[in-house]
Image 1 (cartoon, each protein chain N blue to C red):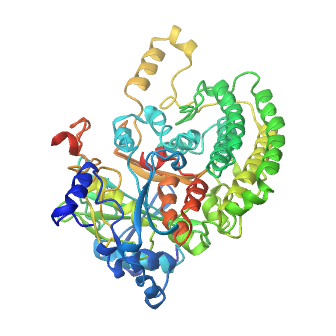
Image 2 (tube, rainbow over the protein chains, first blue to last red; image 1 turned 90 degrees about the vertical axis):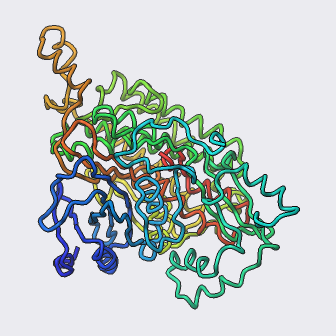
Image 3 (cartoon, rainbow over the protein chains, first blue to last red; image 1 turned 180 degrees about the vertical axis):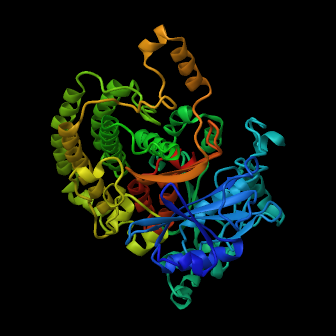
Length: 160
Length: 450
């Protein structure tokens, strides 16, 4: 990453096991990813979520307020052969985030998966529907307050 | 047809009630705005708004038809469902509908200890189980801080198996790609050679698939006596068989006619869609994690990264065929380089004591019991590790809260991302070529749905 790029936007940085991690706020998120895309990060390899409900006291750099959800984005620069990870905090009260579809169309399925599994809504995503669970499924399975095996089978046909 | 009008649509309404996934599917053209259509195509192609304006002048509902391909279709490699919008024989739009094989394996991964984790992840992309185990183990080792302390022999064993797994996976691709395109005898040949590789896996790991062999800290057991002969047998046999494939397929005019110029993807599209592996390389982008971000000892072996130039189905076929030969080249070097030593790290925290010690030492027994019941604790932190699986970049993101179970374990599966290329490869092509395109993406639905 070009030095000073994250600092210029006022975004916290950290290093985790030799990997560079950036912590933008939700407002900085789209601007930062846009700046990284311009900086040569041509591919978004991964976008996923984490529900930190049971682990609120995790280590975060100074100035980053821990919230319940996190969206984790992994970007790759093929030219310089380097990666950067972006972690953005999302409060439980308003689980929404800007969609990266217009910057990286490949995030279409990944954002749908995070929506499906965690209930994070991506603004201006072209097709925000469930992707892995049936469309009439209730709840978001990878949330920590969603018990394992709470409902063994849930199909529309059975409920009728 | 809309279901909200009465009369003769009542029949269709009953029909629709019987299927449960309308909203996730492809919507009829009359319900989609031109703006949405332009966004769907234009965002990926990086087209300006004026360039995509012509996309809006498309036929209306009467001239097009939406059909389902799959989920139960022999060429969908499992349970992939594609909704295709056709005008005559031409595919206008396509939407993959997935999730039929979803079993919540990432959630399961949170309930299992790190020591049990390999058993879970190996079942995701079941055609390249060793790549899944490898990336999970490497992520765990990174969090444990022992990534650089894995004994040399364990690292070379991991490389040997990863490369053999690449061969077995690509051999299976040869079989299914041949069958999908009508070279039905290829199904038998590809499967036959793959079975020989799996037989070697069975000798080493005890199982043909779902090995649970690569574990955090090393591998489960040392290579058995006679393993070298087993590998040499494979290296003797497979090159001749690959030459037969060349005769049967590569040079055949019919084969080329079916694949060349079909399902073309440009480098820009492939990068925008996050495609990796043979799909990205077929478009001419030289990117292979083994060479560009080396892990294990890939920087010490000599091999070529095979790239295509047209981004079509033939390039993807040819790349995989050439990659089998490259993998054999790597395997030969591994045979020369395989060092002696331990096959797992002797770190009391991660590694159970040797079997013989359990008989004579109470502490060893307790230690053994604790590792297999409670597992080992992993320090707090998070890490993302990626390796090159036969299908592209497989990544593992683990967030640890310091306990013996991963707080969150996410697998970035190449097939999940790669199938997003299907609509772009198929657009404007013939429905008969759709089969060739699916086959050339080589998705494994166990990995897509997890």
